[in-house]
Length: 241
Length: 264
Image (cartoon, rainbow over all chains, first blue to last red; front, side, top):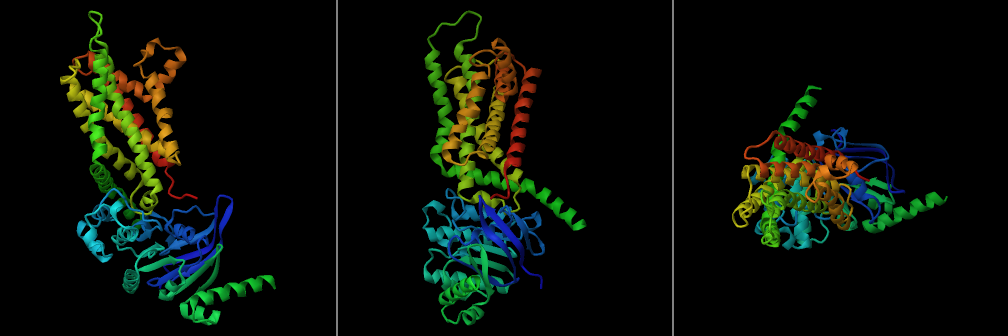
């Protein structure tokens, strides 16, 4: 099967700072891949490169076999930014309908995704009157409406109540089972356990390209956070030696 | 290769629909903002009323148009230009800071679709504004227009679209709200000073005339003055309207070119 995303020697500078130091990895299609790492590790920059809005210094990013950001991909790749990027002065339904229209979908598709993210009761409300969690779900709905082949989600579960979080993760896996490639970033390690594959990012370097089970084995701990720490320490010793 | 051609054709075919969807979205945003709509519709008429009262009792030379007839008519073209410039640069800056612009750039929406969507939406709003203002000016303030009132509305709308286009272009260079607001005096005031309202263009110093003839608002004002003087539309009127429309399209194209899909 063709990989969902292939990244080769990706180098990105922002200002005078190097944010990504030559990353290479592939993201399997039809899987949930977690992009884990602390704040400032380069997760958002990497995601922006995948959707084709990030200037890159060198290296390549291909999505579904094509260079990231080409017109063909724009109808097939969904992107949800960390801060909810929807129109605050429109209702949830108006937002979803606009994004639906951009992908050639109708109002029914918009209503369906609003229900999917649990906002059916708030569909007629202005986004600015919603809670932060509701706003991020409205933002998510606007990406789901196109039924993308690749879905890039930047910290989609921040600030959501635990029940809703579990719901969303179930939805992500249902999408993956149906063939969607998902890349989900998070800085919370307990979400790592929910991913099929893990990419651990730290200071713009790829620390591990693994699975939760493999990471536990490598780090010698059942706790993923602890395993991650072990990995960082081991890497530091390697560098020192 | 053939698939690529088909895809490209599909992208082009869709753009009218995407522009339309964007127009509807921008209008919906306006509809939710009642106060902005009220100000957009009432403010020009109210300001024009102030000018009317200012000059109402001033004597005019026999055979000369009253000063309100001259200035009031010109203001019908300047209000929509200024208002739409401001509204657009703020709207676009909001699009940028809220992250919606970045998101739109990852969708099939083309950059020109987005800008034309804004142009059409605010152009329609300007048409409504112009109809209200022109109606009140010619009835309540008995502004005398020798030519067609419909032509005055048309010129006002083209001016508004020019304002939108320049607002979109200026917003590409504004990183903050403070900068965006200050582009108003930078772009609007020189055009207002040199447009021929304060001093007729042919009485300016030669080098100022050259500048005045490069600035699009000068043509809008000349077109309005032509309509004010002549019963039927003159060739100069149509040429001037074409120049203003051309300048608006040029500004839109430049705005599309300065809108970068990939940023650092």
